[in-house]
Length: 196
Image (cartoon, rainbow, N blue to C red; front, side, top):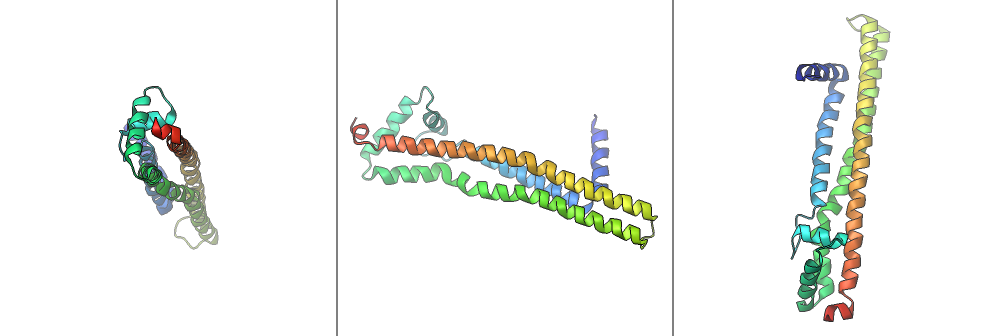
């Protein structure tokens, strides 16, 4: 499929889907931005003390994390309240993602609902065509209404279902990192660990 065929198909969908299809396209771009932002946040860009790469190695228990663990342990030994320092680190590492996940799920759940709005809008057009109040022939109005109803419903589901799966995967990745951080914090706060 070349570019002109793709643009012709998009124009056909825009024409048949109406204003609801445009709203779904705008929502799709918003969801894509939200998911990319979430993915970036799971890379721990605001990592304190050590690099985000070192935090990821440390939290995943990968080889090469012993130096990062030693630096965090040394920093905690100098702190007057290591527990609050670890809590502050947790906030820096995970709060951005924790705040953005619900927003992404709200955007994603809106896609099928907006598709349903297109269904209702298309059915209104269909019923108007059946009533014969349009200047166009009734069959054209009816087919346009059914087309709008089907295209917007399908588009809402095509946007909503895969992005829900992706967002759930990102959320599980985030939760896994948080759990591993709590385990690491527990290990680092053990008295023998703090003194060694």
